[in-house]
Amino acid sequence: MIHWSGIEDRTLALTDYSPEEVGKLIGPDKWLGTEEVFMISRHWRGVVKTEESDDYISHLQKNTFPQLAHIPGFVSASILRRSTARGVEFVILTTWHSMEAIRQFAGEQADVAVVPPVAQAMMVEYDKKVAHYEIAYTYKRE
Image 1 (tube, rainbow, N blue to C red):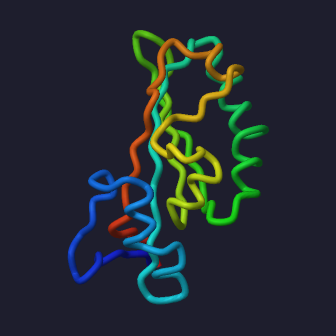
Image 2: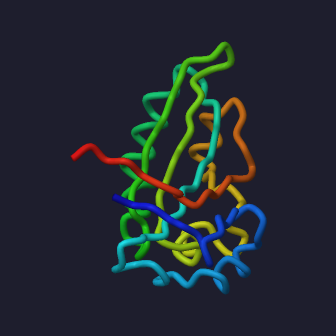
């Protein structure tokens, strides 16, 4: 079970701080190896041309996710999708141990979306920014 109680029993909204400030407040190993594990969920949204949706999933599975797997601090990735009038909307969720790990993927401006040209060519529209959330609690069936 993963949960986060916050610093000094306060909930910390990562969106209220720059990546540098978060790094100072919460070191990458602050909660690792203890009962409380700090993790970050990175969310990004894009709409893909309907006829390109299978190719986009394949691109993520064969290119993006294997690259992420080599970054220390990367935990997991999920692909959410739904059909819309404009195409297939995807939400990509990745889980990380720290903002520093995310910066190894995204660069110093961690809130800027990483969308390579091959993926951009499949898009109808996509978010230029991502959102980061601390994982407050994860319930797992025992």
